[in-house]
Length: 399
Ligand code: ADP
Image 1: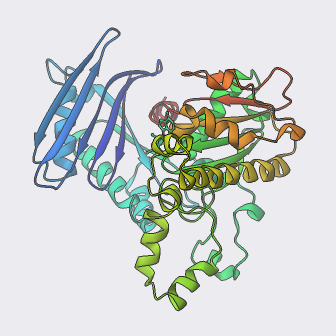
Image 2: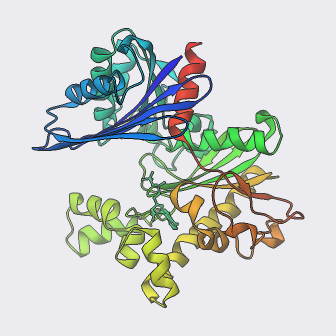
Image 3: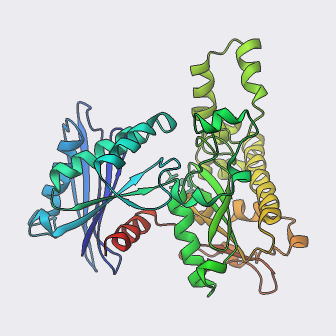
C-alpha cells in the first residue's frame, strides 16, 4: 500500500512516498519557495541500487500548484513510481499543534480541520500552513484518505501536575495555557525503537529521550508514555536550541521591555531567532561551534557548556520524575552526530548509574549502544525518522 507523508511549511512542502507496511521509501522530495518569484523542486526516486534525482527551478504560485507538481513527479515515466495518482491510498500529514483535542492520529474531517484552524493562535507559524497542505492534498489526491499526525499527541499523557503552569487557573480553563510539548512524533518513534532494541514491552519501558536538532527537547517516558517534556505552550522553553533561548526567567522579559525599551515583537524575535547557541556564540550550527571550541574560542566553549549543562540538569530532574530509568536515548542532528555533546551531557553522572563508553561513543551511524556494560542506565543513539513514524501511524490507523 502506498502512503504519502506530507510536511507543509509556510513556503515549502516536504514529502516521502512509502511502501507500507514494509516502510520502504520509494520517492522523496522538497518543493521550496512557494509563492516567491522563483521556486525550486527537488525530487528523488529511490531504487535499491540508485537515486534518480530531478531538480527544477520554476514559479510555484501556491501550495496547490506545489502539490500538483508532486503528483506529476510521482506518476512521471522517468522519475515516478506510480501508474496513476489513485495508487496513493493514504496521505499522512504532519500537524504541529493538536491542542487537547488530539491525543492520537486522526482521520481528517471538516470538524478536524476546523479544530486545527481554532488551534492556530497556539502555533501561528505552523498550523495554518499545515492546513493549507491538507486542503491542497484533498484536491490533488481526492481518492486518498487524509490523516493527521500531531506533534503534540505523544505528550497528551502528561499528568495534570506536569502540564499545568502555576498561574491563575482561568488562563488554563478558558484559554488553554498549559504545557503541550512538541517533537512528539520523534520522541514516540525512538521510544518504540528503544523498546525493540532493549527487548522490553513498550508498556514497561522507562526512558529519557533527548532530541537535539535545530529545535531541541527532552521527554521523560514512563511505561512507554510521555510524563514530562521540556517544550511548553510554545517551542521556546527547556533546552538551549539553535536560535531559541530555552528556559529563561520571565522577569528578563519585563526588564527588556521596561528598562531597556524593547517592544514585544522585538522580544519575541530576540528569544526565537537571536538567542540559544546563536546568542551565546554568534552561530547556530553545532558543527562550527564545536570546531571553534576545539581551537580555543571562549564563546563557543561557553555555548557548549551552557547547552550540555542544561541537558544534564534535565536528565537529573527526569530521573526524579521517572524513578528507575532503562536508558537515555540521543537523537536528531546533534544527538546522532556529536560525540562531544553526548559526552559532556552525561559527564559526572556515574553516581546515578549512567556510564558512557568513551570508545563506543565515537562510533558513527545507525542504532547503537554507547554505555559501558556495567552502566545501570543504558545510553543509546537512535536516529529519528519522523516521516516513517507518520507513515506507520497513518497505515496503522487505516488498516
Ligand atoms: P532540524 O531540527 O532542522 O530537523 P537536525 O535534526 O537536522 O535539525 O539538526 C540540525 C543540527 O545538527 C545543526 O545544529 C547541525 O549543526 C547539527 N549537526 C549535524 N551534524 C553534526 C555533527 N557532525 N556534529 C555536530 N552537530 C551536527
